[in-house]
Length: 230
Ligand SMILES: O=C(CO)[C@H](O)[C@H](O)COP(=O)(O)O
Ligand SMILES: [Fe+2]
Image (tube, rainbow, N blue to C red):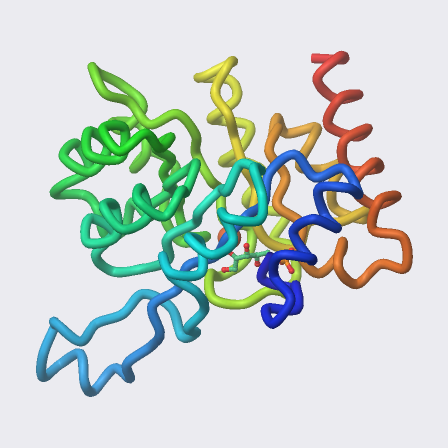
């Protein structure tokens, strides 16, 4: 939904569901503070250089749609957002591993206790091995989101090298939900589907298309075909 008209979010959401989207991907970002400020006070460290929406917008949107709201938290302190987003009606809560190494267990428990589905995301520069511990044990995450662009903005170019991470994950976890996020569209979907991704985030390629329904259908067909052949 990052590529939607935010002033008409409810009708944009309805349009996408009518066009065939299974989930609505909601990018929650916390704004950016320059490097020099981080040196002086780490409390001002934010995750991405962009500011989007938060729980109040999710709450408003929830009143207009029953769709699965797949929230991608690009924030420094995801734990601070669990209560608010649970109350707001979020369905999935995906936090970044880079900022959750010390408290992911507490985070996963809390996300589940608020009725949301926990997922973990990783940036292009983060090795895939860093999410393995979150997929083991009593309280594993239920989805891994592999960033295929640097987080922060829609409309960037897909990074094909990230498909190695998807392949590694798919081999190790055959039934895991693997989401790819960034630069997905008709020209990149086959690589992602062949690597084993089954949840596809597509912003600019769908919203920018003359026939969004055709793009959504093409993405789905590619994933279904790849799943049948593996
Ligand atoms: O998390 C994101 C950016 O940080 C977005 O979900 C992602 O970039 C989707 O947009 P597009 O399909 O236009 O690349
Ligand atoms: Fe995202």
